[in-house]
Length: 249
Image (cartoon, rainbow, N blue to C red; front, side, top):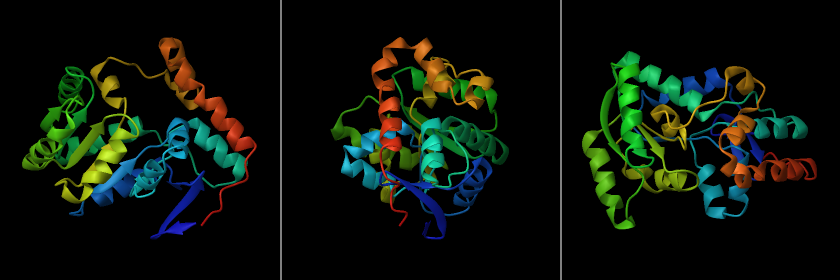
């Protein structure tokens, strides 16, 4: 299926770009040469399942300019239903590559989201690792609805090139889409728990586990409290196995 010149696959009504990691990065690179705000979303199996019960969320995901398959479950679903997705493209790896780009080009970023103190620590660690990046600001994700316009004004006053939003799904995607037309940034990306990783609060799985698609297992062992959330994975796979392929149009 081709949408606006992009090859996409549809999984349970959610359109996902048929890109490998390098193609996704090149898409981002192109966005940085434009003057309008582009949205990058990173759905995994859990997010796809949330979208089944939230039509508004599904619509928001389908408006993404770049929607990458972040999750081994999505790759498995693609193989079962012959959707043609090329490979898993994780949001945190894409964020790292974007930070590398910003470091080389001396571009600027703003981080919005995460727990109080955590976002600030993440920014400090990013500054230590990428000394050429211009940090335009950081705001945690704990705010009142009435303060949304103040937050938007703060971000726009700083004019960052890239805005990372770490409010968790679906809140971060809905926030980005709601304010897309008013944001003075080139790229707005939902990054979920990536801020926790950069802050050192959470750790990624060893590389071998990531390559084997077992990062979810590592996180479950490290955080047993996630067990309830992890139950969505077998539900997702059962839905994949016993459902018909989504019409690719």
